[in-house]
Length: 77
Image 1: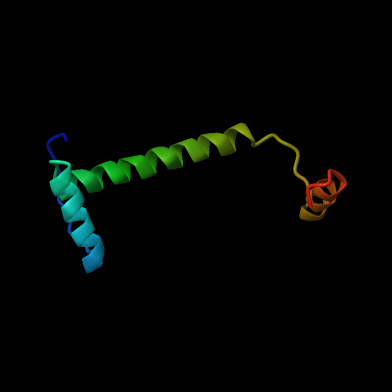
Image 2 (image 1 turned 30 degrees about the vertical axis):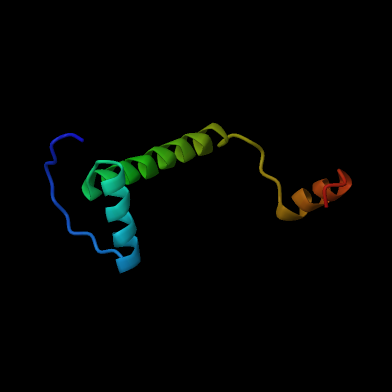
């Protein structure tokens, strides 16, 4: 992990904190590194989701009723 420039206090349920400590110890890393990586992963997923929304922005919209009718017509429901 790169040199941290900011510090935060994070509160966890005791069982989650214990699991983090065990995971950190078993992977020869720190709890801070695990949390940093988890947050980075969450942000990457958000970025991918936003890109997918942008790609589909020009798709035609259909109503929920139309979707259900289409699924029924296709024998999916």
